[in-house]
Length: 253
Length: 197
Image 1 (tube, rainbow over the protein chains, first blue to last red):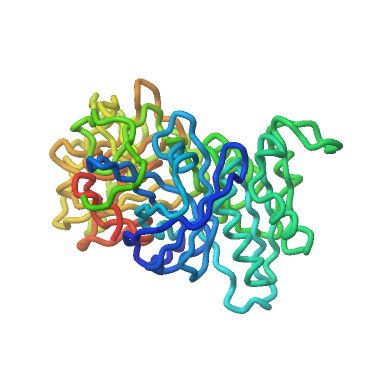
Image 2: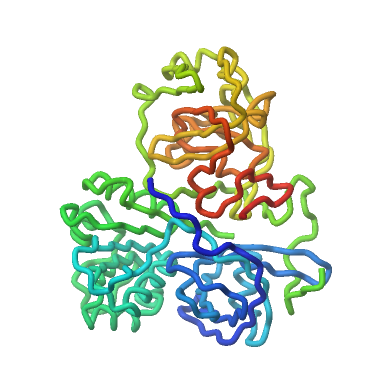
């Protein structure tokens, strides 16, 4: 395995909320201004630390939907119903509030645009998202679209219902302009007129919706553990090299 | 603590004293790994310890189990802020595995099926501090949790407890492993919050 040293050291920062919006009925987009932020690669995450008046603290990790040198960072927080931190971030956090952030974190599950955006022959990138696992992959799509590089991109996005899709317009626009291929799979409920009935991904379903083994894609898979376990195993069974597959999982806290 | 998050009260003040700073108790067992889960069959499995003079000590699955499984109950702490307390495990003590190993080197690189590596000082693996574990919570270790066998070094953050471990290589110096090269702390003591450098 080839490992690169982290480009920037993680450090503590204070971020101020500048915008929020409900991205889906259960997930909230939060934008923070972080004057000391050193920038981050697409795919990285940060820790959010909340402190109560008596000093009690709770810390959780969230993937960044944003990347690049900007000092504004964007998160999408999915509410875990019994959670301690995510319900606060989804319901109570307001514009102007300050929170402590530690990051950027993670130097393996990242994608950087090639230095020469015109370069041909870059290995294609296959992204596979389960639910809110799309957030770090969205950062990669944004980075790719922003750089305008020639790397072939494809996103397979498994989601419960049309209402649960994060950033549907942005993803559709990226697909529309040919910056990537988008394959949506609905597990519970489909849009009207959708060709396939709702259902979970299968080995053959994945095979039909990912870059072919022969094209040697770099693969990034993010989602709940069971989803990542299943998809990564199918990809290996289909012939993708284990070393070409990078995974990120999340549990609910 | 001068910083206070407006409106945040948190859920519970009954913090278990066994929880290191910045950790949250979980009842389930989250999975974290950087790539696909390697399928390792015990019929193909071997465990090795390689030392500086070229000696390689090698155990097959049956030879390894014959060293004797120990029942242990330990707390585990993941750098991603979750901890599990009083978790039952079964494994072979590293003291058993190192019984016949002669080395003057002080550091160990653990290597896993799938290519993962992590570094640990030898004196933190001995004297009842570490095991190669094959069962957790009364069941054979599931593949996504590192089965058939993983390193168990519970006094360090859990990335040090290499899943799918296949061997240890002695080193003269403390070289960084996989996550340690990617910004994680060289040592990883949860009580000192040695998360990142």
